[in-house]
Image (cartoon, rainbow, N blue to C red):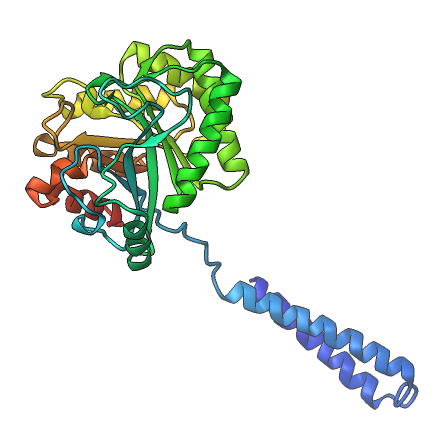
Length: 342
């Protein structure tokens, strides 16, 4: 209907052009040239209108976003290297070096108020190894995780002397490590606290703000789990500084062994509520820890989340334990994330 009207109008303008060209009054005049330019412009618009109505509109299709895969590595000294771990080229892959801790590396370690030292396997996970794996796989990023559970058999407890001094020391020591190792990300995995939630929130929040504001790192994440004494600290941090945190590496493997798929999905919804607006990454351990294991439906649960558009990524604790099974579950996790459909 619209196309027919446009073509009829085009014929109307063409008849007037012909009449103007043959009319002695206007022939060769400047006025005629101006009128003809205008009429030709109108005809061009009508032709475009006809074409737009002939061809159907093509709506943009959102690009497929596979999510991120993350792997903790280097905490247990089992000589695992980056090149041991299979890497799917079709997803974003993050290694997280485990750990950097603000404790003295002695038989009886003491806290150092934000002066972080490297505790991961420095023989097999060196700056040159990082440069090599990133050069070989363009989709690979490498970060470091701060804190962890223990240091030389003792709880690695978050113990700031003051907010200002801890932040100052942390900025200096972490920036130095990031530059030395050419790192891209920081993960916060403190699990024991000798500070109230607001102090923790301010220390970590100010640290993350500095690191992002000054482009020291690209990605930031936190790694809480379902323990009231832990959650209260991370939720305080999230409420005030959640906008600075890219991923929530929630330790779903800290739930009880024998977790079922419905329970797992319920736990996921609970953490989605706790960390509103955050990208919650699902997880399992290859160290015989708890939660929903791959053998009992983890990937089925992931497929459900993926169909709902809430599967932002998967992380595994850890490469040191996965080597015994030849990284079978790393392959399966990455394949699931890379698949466009479930």
